[in-house]
Image (cartoon, rainbow, N blue to C red; front, side, top):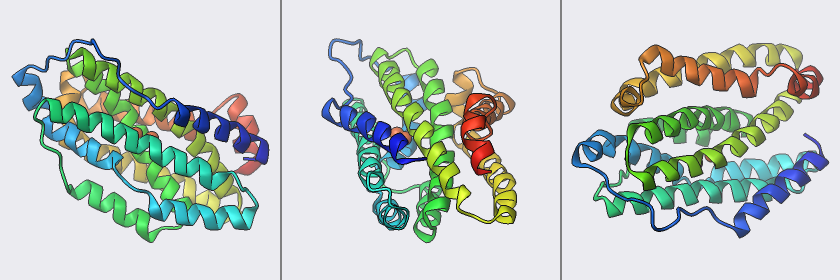
Length: 248
Ligand SMILES: [Fe+2]
Ligand SMILES: [Fe+2]
């Protein structure tokens, strides 16, 4: 990822910061009691995950940006964290309006935060992108699992941001891996793939009521997650030529 790529990403995130995402008024906003029961715990877990202040990520980014002379990078990460907090605010407003209690803690969220706190930037981004890719599959499923128009639009809004996030984070991860010795890179890729598969397998039972309502079986959910992983992190075609061949 060069200075030119970062300038494009900075422009993207600055543009979105000036026009923060919102869900337009006037949409149907009825959440049936059975839907509320189905999604309450699940949506609260994801809302908690979106609330991170990202201080560890910012500190690690600033260090890497100084060493690598990538001055735009900390600002991009700061804006990306703000977008996540915007997702948390939009989900939080929806939950408040429908009396869905927020969570203050969750064991998966605690593990994610602990790993990220202990980690350097590469491990942090590796963990973050797993959460983002699985979140992408989840929000698409949540949209299908509800008839509430406001929630459907909210899910689509979040997914459109997450698409950009994983695009940026995958490029950043390739760049971070490129700085490592070849034998470390050779171990890192399969290890990350295994970590991702285990994470997706842990997410399934916790959110299966929503995922099943959207038509997923355990197998189809894992397949969808894997397809996302392959698209962004094991790409073929043009992207592979540009990043994988150059860096891995
Ligand atoms: Fe998000
Ligand atoms: Fe994201």
